[in-house]
Image 1 (cartoon, one colour):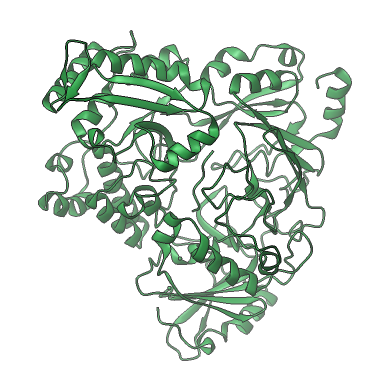
Image 2 (cartoon, rainbow, N blue to C red; image 1 turned 135 degrees about the vertical axis):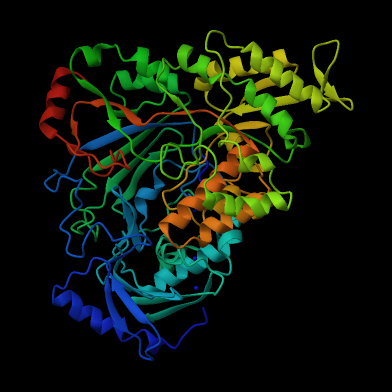
Length: 639
């Protein structure tokens, strides 16, 4: 399904930062381990320069430079075997960086970046394709000292030229919403030598984001792009050349994909990879719908399933593979931010620009009845864009939040109620029946006030226009959830309908804004920053894979700037509370549901570490294959 693409002051002379390189060599050779990095003076004595194996804006890095492996992996995990999963719909492209076509699943396995994060350090970024990075206190620039052993999957070496080429490629051909946000962040990219590259940032670039921005770009091969003439703004049936641990082995369009572990992967022994990338092959089977996919899982067509249907989880896991002990079902803790799964309105359509009309629609989705009747009580209601974290706004605003919100209220950009009322939560409904009559009356009054009057045929109209609402879907699994919502809206006088289309149409219609309500998961991070503009800023509303609701709100834009400009954890938390509060008050969404566990089922030939990390399930990265158990399952006829 559609994915988004996801960063420096006047350039000083190269000599200003060059003396840090030999200082770093001595620091590493001498075994001096400084968690936050080493310091060396610039040639001009202008600023101290930090040299480190990683970067964090808040506190200390969790892992030191001489780490042997991540805490949550099994360093002795065996290599081998296959894990297989399923995907719904179809694919016609291997380019995940364009909005053309429908991208194949798991293409990210083939690519890597200079810096990486871990599943147990919410703020840390660690050198991966680099050995160290250097930056001054001002963060006006950063130098990455690249590893000299990194190769692309065909054996050609990766150099600083490839890094510079890739960065410029994204700035020239990257999707519009990405370039809209980051254009003007980088003043200069300099290749200092084959394995050193310097990014100099503009004065206006957000300092908390710049190093992660520069180090987070995927690295492609310059020579390969020049040889092939490939472009990242076009759909392609050939993957780009990457440095990743996996390569595309084979595929049958719209049926299956197989990725194979690169046996010559440059980073196989890298400390960040120890105990990871354990499967020889990763297979993806494609199905038109989840019901067919589940039947295929029962008979072993694929072997690992993350269950996202509450009905199936509650009632479907009763079949021979379980009775025979061939399969395992588990609930594993999920400490990540609760995904802000929701329906979102298309705010470019005039009828949804009135907050009274949006609230009336919101009142007609009965989560409590759905959870009790359809979801077997397995879910909780989404309330916040940072659900279940310290970043979630709760209760009435703090003094810090008020200092950010008052000026926006004084300028007439926010309702004064935001200063005194608790943070908005979704409407509550009675669970006894699908239609809550009290909410129906409230919604009816709202639409009456907004001028949408019920006619003799029971349909609401205003100035001769019918109040119509189409909920766009592609998965039949959502029919049982959407249809009661449609029935409630019809009782309200809304000409509502569910329209289910194939995955290619679904992608295109979301992209072009051809919908009234559509599913969207507004996934946020523990350190919100410049990426907020892709999700919520007016500048991305015209063409965005994240700002699907076409949100244009000057108050939201200003609050986003406060989050981006925050320099301390307390400042960032306060600003995020204010932003969360304003987003929720806007009401451009109908919040759905979440759960704080991973519900998984798999054939009993996989193992995972006993102490799982808080922020990832990691089945493709740090789980492993038990060859003996797999052989027993084959002999027993499990698949």
